[in-house]
Length: 104
Image (cartoon, rainbow, N blue to C red):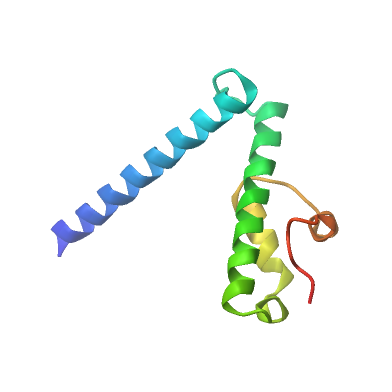
C-alpha cells in the first residue's frame, strides 16, 4: 500500500511540474520574455487570463452535461476557483464577463 501511495504522489508531482513548465512556456510565448519569479503586473494579468480560460471551459462543459447545472451551483464555487488560481476578483466582475456562462 505504501508503494502505491508513493507512486501516486510521484505521478502527481510529475503532472504538476509538467503543467508549471507548460504555463511558463505559454507566458514566454505571449509576453516575449521568461516568466518572472516575482508577482509582476504581467504575471497577474497572465493568471487572470488563465483563470478565465479555466472558468470558461468549465462552464461550457458543465452546461453540455446538464444545461440546468448553473442553477444548482453556489456562486461561491466560481469564486473559489478564481481564488485557488491566485486571482482577486469581485463576483460582480466575473458575472459581467461574456465568456463565462453563469446565467440561470
